[in-house]
Image 1: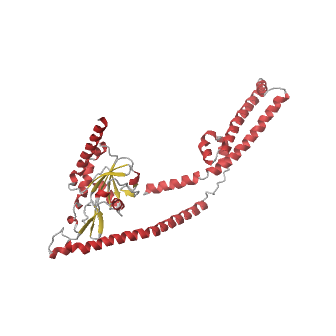
Image 2: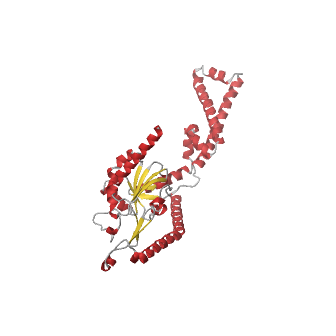
Image 3: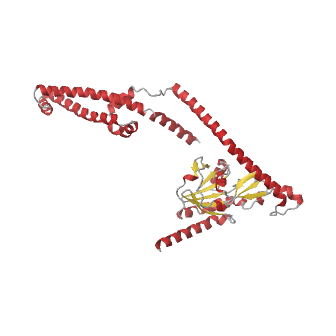
Length: 377
């Protein structure tokens, strides 16, 4: 969080500073033109002196330099002539270039003396005073607040629709619970065991494009899965156990629900081998908070990134298997292999989480071997 605040502050500072370049360049151009005019007059005076003696400029300077008193004047005149030629060319180039062109060639044509004089007397296009900064801060807060309110209002229908969809799923689940044949329990214990409803279809995810979803990692950074270009492995899980914190009631009744930690450790122990098999990144995704992800990553010494997806956007976008327990929605353990934003393969259900990563690694090695054989055939 601190790094993002500092980066944001640096960004505002850079924006405020660079926004002054067009005006600074204009004032620099005016000073440069004045200096060129001054040098032009001095060069014209030298040429006039040479003409009075019916001499060329070069002959006049050479003759002037033969005397002890004239040598210094000759050197000064030659310097003025050279500087006039250079600054005249710079002035012409600066005048012809637009704002972006001036920025591109500033390092090449800028005269240090003129730059320093311009900076000394520079008048900003928008005064960057304490008062101006205060007004800019108020405007920033107002604009930020207006955008947040607008985003809240625009997103409200979508959030309401999602809540209605989830409620309909829960209502249908509860209405069908008495007729469900997957669980046989005694009548006296029926109220103590929550009903579990499964949904989603892993086959839908294969060949689909990863959605542009920005998820928060355990270190606070933002990862957009749609920006992944190198091959990646993304595994999902419902809930990673935390020491001293009990699982939700009925958790043991959920198929594969207790596989999360074993699945995470499976990819931890085979991480280097998976990378050597051609996988660029490994991500674990669940609906848990950033703090829970950070605790699990630290406690289990995970070498890869855990992402927090509290609204299960990835699961909904790819229709990944998920389940509802006690009116809460969770994503089931699944493994996705992606490349260039597209899901190439998927594994589900995860019957044995401890061997999931080695089995995936074997599949990757098998695919790579087959690809190499096809190329050499």
